[in-house]
Image 1 (cartoon, rainbow, N blue to C red):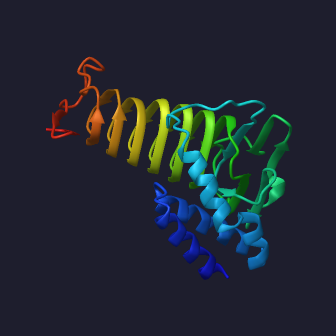
Image 2: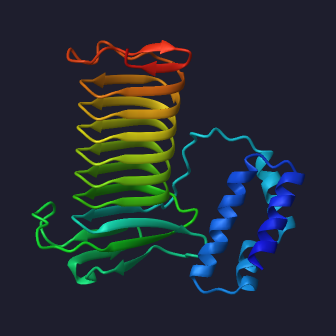
Image 3: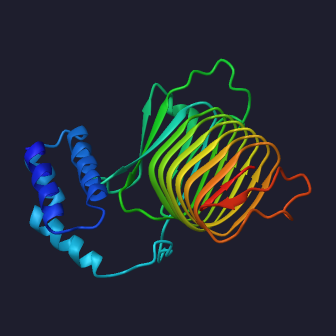
Length: 289
């Protein structure tokens, strides 16, 4: 049963001093719930997840290999993922039981989209001219189901007034362009990341990258954890990064920028002649003063 399996897992994680055991527990809890959503029995789910002993053994093996967090992967034949949507919301779900990428449409006409699922390229594109007027269009939700451990070569996402939600995205390169929708993402991991925002809000739990470029006009960015070199251009929105590790080059006009953590650079006065008051490093914080 679900409760018994998860309780035994949590106990074993604690007893074996598995690092970040709470994060591991939540991962398996989500996996179990995915199985329930797929109408699998408890026995089938637990067989796929593996025994508690096997899980602990594998976790211990992984902990003996120290890998830099911002390592970028051997991509092999990784695929490109492209999503272009005008009004429909998009939710990317990582499914431990999925063998390939699939799409599920909820209150959306599938015929409105061109879907390609080829060996190296997967794309979902609205048939009408992108960013044409969305008037008289009713929005629904499109689910993009991806295998849990998939690593893409490039991920390109362009949205109009749609909201975007993702549990995690891993790729060599991630590019997101947003007009007015909101983004809610648990985890982004890539060699390079570019986020361009007009008026929507970005809420991201964790980013690990070598370098990230963030361009913002009037929306807000709330990032819990960011590791990587940051180039940031901000006009009027607010930027909050709770924990930041890396170099920063920041241009700001009127918004508030708060970086907390162990940044290796102060805000760069040379970035722009129209920078707002340059933040000062105070007890590990960068804040407007």
